Amino acid sequence: MAPTIEYQLLLPVIVVFGVAVMGIGAEALVVRRLRFVVQVVLTSAAIAAALLFTIRNWMDGDARTIAAVGAIAVDNPALAAWVLLLVGAAGVLVVATERISNGGISAFAAQAAVPPGSPEENTAENLRAEQTEIFPLFLFSLSGMMVLVAASNLISAFVGLEVMSLPLYLLVGLARRNRLLSHEAALKYFLLGVSASAVFLYGMALLFGFAGSFDYASIATAIAAPHSDDTLLYLGTALTASGLLFKLGVFPFHAWMPDVYTGAPTAITAYLATCGKITAAYALLRLLFVPLGALRWSWQLPLTVAAVVSIAFGAVAGLTQNDVKRGLAYTGIAHAGFLLLPIAAAATVHTGESVSDLGSVSVLLFYLVAYLPATLGTFALTLWVHGADGPDADLASWRGLAYREPFVALAMGVLLLSLIGLPGTGGFTTKLLVLVLAWRNGMAWAVFAALAFTLVTAGFYFRVLQAMFLKAPLTACPAVPHSKPMSVLVVLCVIITVYLGLFPTQAGYLIADMAGLLR
Image (cartoon, rainbow, N blue to C red; front, side):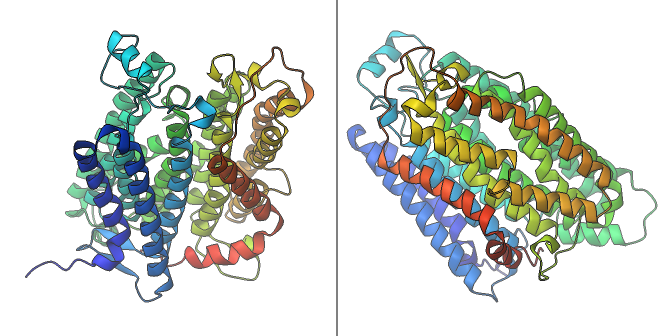
């Protein structure tokens, strides 16, 4: 009997992957001077079409199923994750295509396959060549993310993990400026990433040895049945969770983040910080809640400890950073800890009158909804802060920014206040929901620790704010032209951030509806 494939439900993934394949064909068939335009059009069309298909599937309330012969769960959380990933990818695409603030050229390497500083690279630079292969690689990675967040068995989860990761290893090493630093970042990310994938794969094998199946539902059934030895189960759980915690950037699996965030092109850094974290958080949530939910009392405490330690480490390590992108990497480790807290709380989903009654899935989704625009907008704005030689993330280049670039400083200020979690921003609402959820589920010690180290985390953000608003520039810095697409992106990020802080209830009800029916 032929397998049944629900093509309509899987259209978002199919479109993104299919256009990525078309992009590879375009690289071979389209003349070089037209490739950039063709690739941007293809990528934009793929993201827009996938988003429309996802929204259509969400509006079809009966279309909730385990699709592709048990491989993909098309439920409300998966659809919500797809929407977030596609919206985030659209924003990253705007940053990736930015040329005006970079002197009219792409931020990606002119020719990736030649040694830095070689005559071949100099020739490519003089011709203003650019890598258009980044766009199909970008879509391949996005399709892997979409599979991973909706995976309903360990095989599809591993396939999604690898399809997501392999293009990212390449993209990290394609920065036009600081080529050697970019190559070092890519190598470190690759070596640590494949190690994490191997750990995840070994954990899969152990879980298969326990349950006799890779299917999430079958693993849950095997856990519920009487059995004499849990060794394979607990080892498999620890190893598979560790593989995903690496992608999330949780301590002690964080070592790749500072170097990769600093060395990668800014668009790819934003991609990792937004879509990468969304994917890892959702995949971990689904793994722990669906097949391993019965083990809650075993993984809840270690996960809570990892969350608190991550918040503490990111807060303290970020204080000493003078590179803004590197500092955002360390504070991103702290945010990864906050993303872990609602998962560790393992609370059921509620849809009561108060937004504070939201459960783990809803609170995680709310946090990601607020974290996405704040982080994306922050990294986008770093392209508009220039030193003598172009975009510069050194804190000295940010001195006096409010006097020479008031729009940039004001937008950055609002987004940083949201990342801190101050009232009036989406960051305050989401952190409040996370802490209330943790408190209601008996994690008071974690709440107090998270609050204390959040104050420490604010230290780095306030250093940036102080440099922008309270200090005079050290040297004269060139005026940076602002492209319209980037300006619109930044304004949207600020508006969404403020809206979620001032009117959280309306968004809360929609998020509660999108978070139900986890399969």
